[in-house]
Structures are given as structure tokens and as C-alpha cells.
Image 1 (cartoon, one colour):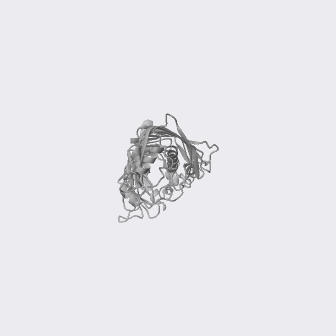
Image 2 (spheres, helix red, strand yellow; image 1 turned 120 degrees about the horizontal axis):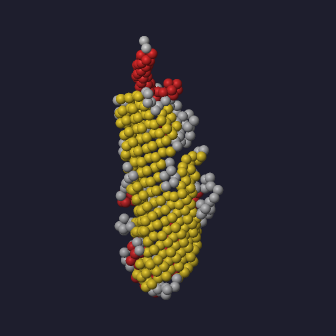
Image 3 (cartoon, helix red, strand yellow; image 1 turned 120 degrees about the vertical axis):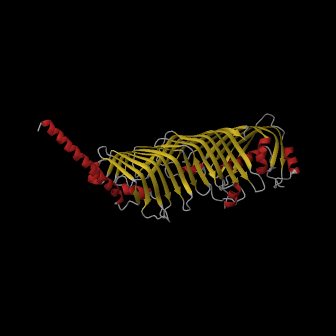
Length: 519
């Protein structure tokens, strides 16, 4: 027999042996692979599929029509996670790690069209215990990719609490093992990205949050068409609250955080970003005054930031081309008074907590907008979160206020209407957790007043006549100035504090001893 023929026969034998070995090993792996997970007593799920394709030479596994269901759940009483996955592709798995250590070490895991429904459990769902720990000795992979996924979280009445559609995710350098399992982030990764077309979240019993396109990565967040929508009508809300409370309706065209850093140092969460950019915020705040007063002490913003329990540092928050409206309704038979701020642009600097900080710069807020859609308003607000007196200063300038603009607010809230123009108002409001003092100045033309009785319906002729005798028709081009001091009502907000300061300034410059008079 020639040497060439011997070589060819040898190669043929090797090919046959290799083919048989490949088939045998593939068959063994197809039996062995699901048992690695299923045999773990900590694995809480049953996993099944319709087809499993293994290409041993390339180290690829394809699973078709996989199903996931909890081991201890029944058709009558579902709990935990249920899933249907069209295809799972595992690329370049390590046969040696599988044979020697019962570990799955792969380059890539690609999951197509997963649909996951998470039912409530008797015990609170725990990511570490229910999902991560069963794999603590199993999975190492360079990337995990999810394409066109859907996720639904149900509450105890099978109503949707959270829903996301067309989810696309990519995680790089995934590691789960005994060294990571007890960390705050038990799944380690080098980077991630998440995109979805829409998101719905039931935020408590009173609000829903929805978004359209959502893009999140380890370094940035972009949210389009964010909406916080009340579930109740205003009447339902007013009748349901035991104490005074605001109802919010907020829409944001775009939320952009271009540079985000977060994680844990020991057990302390840190969140840091140089910029949060909000475009076209539309916020309507409604307060029904029919409910009893909430007499709890209200914290000022400096105290709220000072008491944050994690490491927060935001250099700048910007609101661009926005609109803010506050509505207050005194009774069911009166319409709500509205205060509107349009063309609202604001820059807030140095929003932070004191944790892990060596520098404590002042927090500042600068606003320019149109008051009641017509009068330019500029505000500069400063405070230091480390000052435990909660001292702050608000400086403002308001120009060209028409009586026709402020009457819809002044009449329901103050039982007063005016004719004439307020040309300029300046104020410096120095406050703290107990009291305030500052300066107030006003210039006006052709001003007259009408005061109403407490029911707001009948004119108080005597008080109106006396008031107009005391008020000059104009300030003769000069600013009328006064010093103002008011005590803080601690069960009211800082905006009530500011309003009472301005109200006192108006009283002292325009209507001495009149507005606070009787019937």
C-alpha cells in the first residue's frame, strides 16, 4: 500500500471518528446543558425549549422557543417570572469549562424576542436571590444582547404596574460568581446600553408615568416625551385626600443627562453628573384648599438636600422653554385661581448632598420668564445646604404688570381687584427656617382698587373708597420703598413664605391698614 493511500485512509478514519465524536458530544451536551441549571437546588425556574442545535466545532448553541416558569407556581396561582423567548444564541462556549467545572463560559449570548411577565410573589421579589444566586458558579460572558424584548410587571390584582416595549439591551463583560454575589451590584459588567420604544409605570396609587423613546447607558440618559399624569380627576383628588396636598401634571419634551456616573463605594450609592437638561417642561400644580390643613412642619430645600442619604452631585440643571402653572381652589363653588409662568428658563447650580464632599458651594437658582404670559420676571435664589439655620436669599424684579392680568389671581386669593399698571416691583427676601426680612419697592401708574367682602361676591364700598383715598394714582415716576419682615408659618411651603412677604410689601406701599380690614 502506498504512503499516499495510507494517509488518505488515516484521514478518513479521523474524519469519521471526529464526526461520531462531535455527534456524540453534541448529544451529550444537549442532555448535560439543561441539567447543569435544573439540578441546582437554588434554581427556582423550570426551563424548556422545542429545539436545541449545537455546533461543537464552532462552540455555538442555538435554543429555539424557550420557556421559563417558576418551579413552585401553579396555573391557578401564578407568581414570579414567566417567559417566552423566540431564540437564544450562545457563541463560542468553552467545552473545557463545561466538562471540568460545570460552568458555562461563552463569548456572546444573544436573546431574540423575549417576552417576560413578572407576577407578584408572596415574598418580595429579590434579584439576588431569585435570579443571580442560581448562576453564581455558572456564567461568564463577554456580551449579553437582547433584541426586541417585552417586559410586564403585574400587581396583586393582575393590573399592569410596569410595561416596556421593543427593548434592546447590550451588556459587556458580564461576570457572576461567588466573589460578586454579595456586592450591592451582584452582576459585574464593563458597560451597558438599553433602548425601548415606550415605557409605562404606575407610580403609586395616584400617578402614571409614560415615556416614548428611552435611551440609557452607563454614561448617559435620554428620555423623550416624559409624562407624569394623575389617575384621578381634580374633584376625585380633592375629595380623597385627608389633608391639603398638591396634585401634579408634568410633561417634558426631552430629558437629557449627557454624562452620568453612578455606582457604590462600599455600601454608599453615588450619583454624579455635570448636567441635567430639561426641554419644554409643562408643569401644572393644583392645590384644593377644601381639605383640612396639613399642619406638619415643611422642610426648606436646603434641609431636604442636607438629609439625602447618598452621595449626590449635580453641577447644573437647566429648564429650557418651559411653562409652570400653579392653581389654587378655595372652595368647590369657586374656580381655581391661576398663576402662570411662561417662556420659563432656569439654571440651577450645585445640587448636592453633603456626603463625601470637601467643598460646599452655594446652591443657586436663576429664573427668567413671563409672569401671567406678559410681565418679565427675573429671580435669583441662593442658599447653602450646610447652614443649619436654612438661611436663603431670593431677589426678584417684575415689570409691566397689567391689572387685567393679576385680577384673576388677586380676587379669589385676596378679595381685591385693581385698575392701572404696576410698572416695576423689586424685592430682596432674606429668610430662614423661622423668619424673614428684606426690602420691597414698587412703581405704578393710575392705580385704583376695589375690595370685596369675604364671600368674594359683593363689593366692600366703604373700604374701597377709603383705600382709594389713601392710594395715590401713581408713584410720580419714583419707587415707593419699604422694609418688610414676616414670621414663617412652618406648616406652609417656602412659596407661601415668599407670597406673604410680597403681600406685606404691597400692603405697606399701597394700602396701609386696608387689605387686612374687616367686612
